[in-house]
Length: 268
Length: 268
Image (spheres, rainbow over the protein chains, first blue to last red):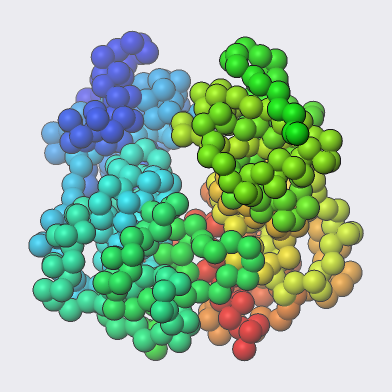
């Protein structure tokens, strides 16, 4: 028999503590983050991430995957809470709450622990500010078989509710590393790896460029792009057609178009 | 001498009326929407869209493009307001307000008025709910030289602050049409046009499919995808590699990867 603790009050301290995980300072202090939805929690479980706390909605429907998740949480000594849809909505900040949410321990991988030859493509984001873009890059990385996402300088938090949601579970499947440029570049140059960026500077057309695995595909900040120094350090600068008035794409879109192009080239 | 009306109070009725344009019901009642930033307003001006009201921050720097914009607004009988950064921030809902915002008349184009042969690619979104995705699709459409974006069924509002912002000005350069599926399909079939969707159903690999202009590239709702009926009505269903756990991409990302692929094929 699995034990569930029932929470019925909005002002319950547990509700407050869970809700606080929507703020970065609380996430960093606790080293924990929130993820919601059975699909996402099942992806997490498949990758070996079992929530320390599972929050079930009283409005949930029975589901074998949910039962399996509960069993795993109980077996690993986690806590299982049950609460109303309204309170769950308050915790996750979503109007139509999912039937389940989980609290996970934050993780990331040191650069030195990345096995770069494990995957043909790695995504790199520099000072990416929008958590939705960050999550979308994780999702795209999963789709193109990337090894993970390396976050350079001051990026949005990959464990924010928005990033986790936009990643559609890829926050659990993709390796995430965080580093400064002056740690990243020496690490990169200490092994094989082609550093690639979209650029207007002395760039080759992206469809005919020579890509060589492992490719490190780097995109820059949403408004400023990459610093000149970073662009100049690239092994390959590529350019994409821009037929309209704009001279750039959304950062997550640029990463995806180039990422799929690289995948097709490497598969040849 | 250009006349500027100074607004200094948060509770000024004009501030309230402008701020109300962040809500869809007010936009629809007024037929007007907000856009912010000199770059965006300059793109709008280049496409013949002059704001009916221009709101300047007292913290702005002088700029020849801003002077040109002011002159055009004055010449077309528009109103020019000047207010503090705090009040401008309240109006646009952005913490770091731009130096200028404008109120524009909403526009859209009837399907029957679209000149489909004017562009090789048109983007089509079905029940797209996220205004950021919608704006990103407009931005991508501009980049790939699309004719415009056709919004099917109940999509997010292209004139919401989030969509306008994410479009980076493309809301002004791209033709926007809104229609129901049962108007769109007969219109499409009354002329030339290849209807294309990403699909897992009897689909061809997207890199080797035969694309023929004008291509109408359709993406579906963020969580449900396209209805089966819509997929079956397509002339071409294409599939993209999905190497990870996920079975789909972000809608705006899928549109961009396929859009760039189609552009490359048509350019051959």
